[in-house]
Image (tube, rainbow, N blue to C red; front, side, top):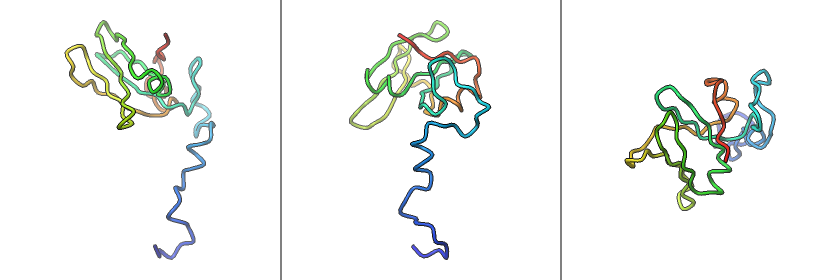
Length: 115
């Protein structure tokens, strides 16, 4: 592709950023046991929030939990490389995959799911 710039457009310009463990904003402190750029699945139900480490969700394939008294299942499908979150009625619960530093910056009171 000719754009008039010397940049290689076949290479992701953020490749090094994704691989680096350093965060963009060092003033956002990670929570206990979490790294700034660890990917998490963030869930909010009725004003209560929780983060699930993507690596844990991928390795376990399913995590059952309750947020604000409501039971949920966080599932990973290796065939499609996707995560879904559902309530006990099987309805999809809104969620987001993001860096821990971003989620923690928005929801500083967040607890990270632990066994």
